[in-house]
Length: 325
Image 1: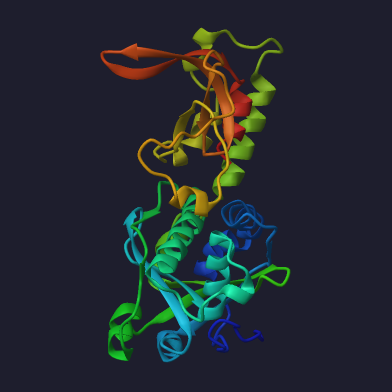
Image 2 (image 1 turned 90 degrees about the vertical axis):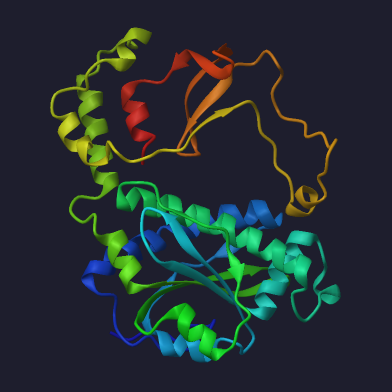
């Protein structure tokens, strides 16, 4: 199987993706639309994100490219799996990304990233990797998260320690935004980390959720269930399909309101700053699952000096199951 060379480090992948790594490759393949939205919000511009170019590279090919106009952001996993993940971009691409973040025109951009610019870049890298981790969490069946990113600035010998000696799974996505940005963004992880992520195997999380939702929809009564039915046992058979993901952590948020801000405005916040949200004080708050779907609404109460929410509206069990995907 032939591969196109990667743009970021201009290397030819040595082998196709091995079968045990296909689930992780598929997770990267689904990220284009998610990252397009994420980049668009954070950069305040319309961003096009290509489907990923995927392949396996020996670590020595990546190490040989370090120090040749490549910005390397790296971190380790803090939960879910053991190992590291890297995000690489050519310096001019990283500079263009920071220029969009800070509202600097291409003509006024520097040739390299100073300390403040690097901080802005690493903040964006962390946010983007957070979206990747959500996808991996669904694949792996439990929460996958990473520590904050740092920039690598060492020499070749340090790069050998950083990347190791084995093979690396690489996923490169093209980025473009008119004349302001044209380049690529590369995710790299050791194949041992990808093996851990793909170890869930068997039926995908999305398939399990879809089948459970169909079962719930078939067995639910036409009328909405009463509030007391929320804790009722699941329909027969559904618990067997969902059992595999019952121990998976889900991000649950109570949302008082929201707004959107450019990163340059976020960086200007300080003590005394006021951020206006889009809800009045008497509007019910939202209970959000998976960072994307409102499954219930309620009123804020205090329980033993802690904030809590008393649910006043809730979606059907079918809709709640579908929200897991």
